[in-house]
Length: 229
Image (cartoon, rainbow, N blue to C red; front, side):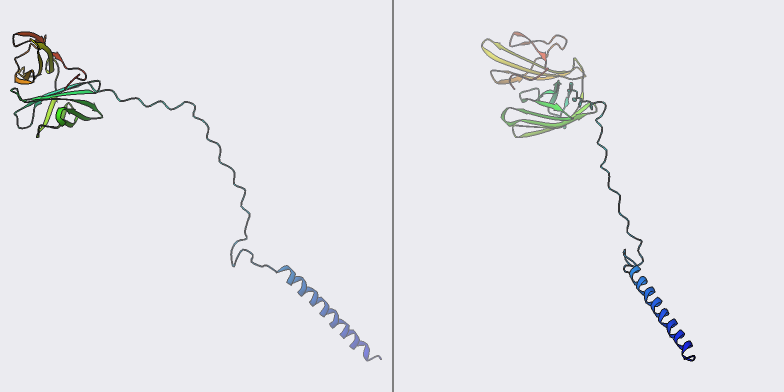
């Protein structure tokens, strides 16, 4: 029995050591179920803070000013067409444009329309048209009438230069006259008597006085739309 004492003590120690090892392994396994929850080598995931709503836009202290309307055009351009052979004048009052092209003998055309945003757009009898542009003290464009075309680039002019017109009834005949007064004082125009054209007599630019077929008439500067082309 004395010899069995140390053996029993050794067996008891081994049994205790086995129990301690088993407990340690169990604790280690429970603590390492998810060693890298965010992925291999990745930083642990953190919850993103709640996103705050953007601040409401504050109303402007002052309402934005209303758009200023473009100023209406007031101008007169006059001169000869490219290549000569005819003269043109364009008179614009508050954006309303009237143009007159004539050769001083019998060919003429009246047109009217608009001048705005640097563009001219006018029409006349029998499909006549004028399209063009203006700016920098000049007007450029094309007149189409009676199967012909004229191109032009003419400069701005000031009174007494410009466009004049007279209408009247003389001895039961309808008279319509058109005159273009150029800066050098020269005049070009046509008068129709019952639709028969003839060269226009000169007017007095200061007063507009003119005599047609023995009748005294007054030619007025063209300002605004015509009642008839």
